[in-house]
Amino acid sequence: MTQITAPTTAASGTDVRVRFCPSPTGTPHVGLIRTALFNWAYARRTGGKFIFRIEDTDANRDSEESYDQLVEALRWLGIDWDEGVDTGGPHEPYRQSLRGEIYQEVIQKLLASGHLYESFLTGEEIEARNIANSRAVQLGYDNSERDLSEDDKAAYLAEGRQPALRLRVPDQDITFEDLVRGEITFPAGSFPDFVVVRPGGAPLYTLVNPVDDALMGVTHVLRGEDLLSSTPRQIALYNALFESGVAEFIPRFGHLPFVMGEGNKKLSKRNPESNLFLHRDRGFIPEGLLNYLSLLGWSISADRDIFSLQELCENFDIGQVNPNPARFDLKKAESINASHIRLLSDEDFIERTLAYLQSAGVVSGQPTEREVQILAAVAPLTKERVIVLGDVPAMVAFLFVEDDALIIEEDALKQLPENSNEIVRNAMTALLDLQEWTTENIQSALSQALVETMGEKPRNAFGPVRTAISGRRVTPPLFECMEILGKDSSLARLESFVQSR
RNA sequence: GGCUCCAUCGUUUAGCGGCCUAGGACGCUGCCCUCUCACGGCAGUAGCGCGGGUUCAAAUCCCGCUGGAGUCACCA
Image (cartoon, chains in turn cyan, blue):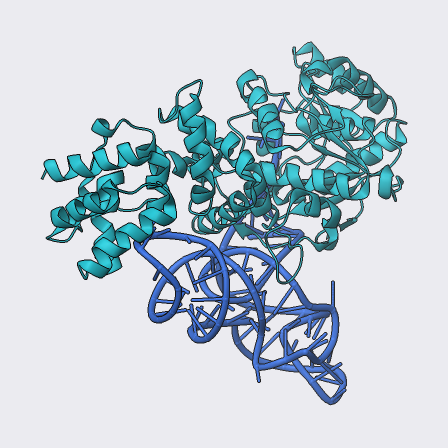
């Protein structure tokens, strides 16, 4: 009767080795990124190593495009890895599709030590056996081929059958201390001997994932909750690996809560909110998105939720992760992102915004001197009022267009007072003789003419001017914008507003 | 169905036996600031799923129930 004899690692501090090992299917999912982030933060916190491995053993679903996206995602986010694809390391290669020979060697060792055995029964035959023995079909395989004689095997082989390889599962309860959930026990017999190698020799995830973790010396496996129930299987395999001289220990496991979408379901790949790149394209910045993601199951302290990546790395503790599933709340994510945008220096903000401005056609591919100048002036005014960088182009576009190309938007026109033309006319008169074209002077000239002399409420007085200047209802502060535009341009816009009505 | 996990405001999170008449944040509402929109400030809204224990004392520990989720592949 097989028993678990392998020790569990006691590694801590710089001995910690964690990994992120996605399958390259589809575009990066925020839940997946959260997993990467926690592993990374744990490595940075402990001073251990973060390994980035690719599990591409399913040629039908995996794609090179998806692989590239995974790498691109981590690079964009600033989640760096110490060993893995691209950067290399002592356990190359880091793509499972390139590790075939390694697996074959391990399979031989496992076979030699008797932990793996040949299984010839097909799915239908297994089901038929269960029905015949009035055993519940859901129970699956009945371990009936554990002790097949050589004659039996030869007979199957003679039929032209090829055996799959199954792991001989220990006959005992399997208990482990989950890093986020505490002690978990799966009773003996919870699962049957399972297939680890297909007929023909292709190893399955169930084999390859623990094998690579063992070979790469992974000490802490932090992964999604969906893998919780396969953990005892993996422990069983680790034990076989240990007894075959392949593994030195069983790692410790920590199962991260799900990231949920609408309703009570896991945030699905179909849901656009799950798509990392959609958030990036809207103008989430890595600091904001990562800050939010780390809040899904963790918190830095009771009364704070805006923090830097460095603070995350200094404080992250897997033991403090909350086991409850967390919902992805876009509103909160946006709020956090907005906070991080405000934390950016003006230069940084401009640099990051440029691409959004260019793809919206607001700024030329190679910004002109004038464009750079406008950007520098308007950046501090804009930074305070956007939630994603993609909000910037619409907000500042009017500063970059020719005066005669300015479009006055419908909703801006709608809320203007009756005497808008009179107001704008008076504004022109007041501004015409202004010597120094500064925010302060513009403001006091307009205040005097429109508020004091005309007796208009500020709101009524400046609304029409704002619309004439920008074509919009909402803009960065008006007088600053007029200063940026310059006197000629501002007056021209006021003039043409009056003319057009 | 078996096994496993989970359960604090609408959402997220603090809480790990007394600091809790349960704290923060997002959202929402109101007010202040104000040239619009934001920012900022102030105030308000709203929660320990239910039932038993243990204890001088329970959101916190135990048991049961209920509800939710995951998993039971020759996918990963």
